[in-house]
Length: 231
Image 1 (cartoon, rainbow, N blue to C red):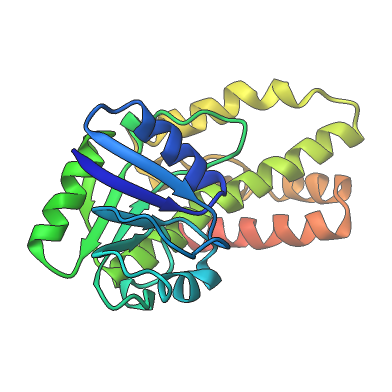
Image 2: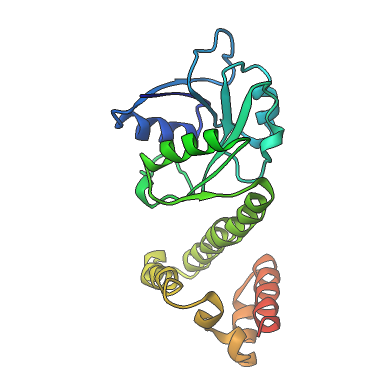
């Protein structure tokens, strides 16, 4: 039995809590990061708070092994005086959307091999996708994830706005979005690239720009140039 304390009440913390509660080999508790008086003891204390709060929150924790869940913050940002680690899940977490943890990659780091093995054992109760990744590698992975997820989702938001402006249902794009995601499982992103940018269809590009507002035009132009520069 592994005892786990989750510090935080956000999306990551709540999804982890729900997942751990289903596991018979885990004893789990959750506290709010603003309630750090008389912290319950645990084998592993998982800090799931905003990046800027990790140092301050961890400085109040005396439990033997403390980890955070951030992709962009180094392990050394933890200010506890005990053992340190990272338990980073490479996934997007939203409040109302369930997460299939079996498909979630866990990126693990610790100050010694015994703790790393403990984190791996904990992660494998949820997923077979576990990776040993150090702080510098994780920072690079996190910025790659921002491009792959956050920026992509922002493009979905722009596409939805364009659809709304022209009285089109956004769900018409759902099959295209799904196929784009599935395609890169069998092709590299470079091989999968299509569209007027890579074909250098200048007439189509100009027609598109005339349909967009100034902000959308700026993004379209930057992305089109980036595509063309890449080929």
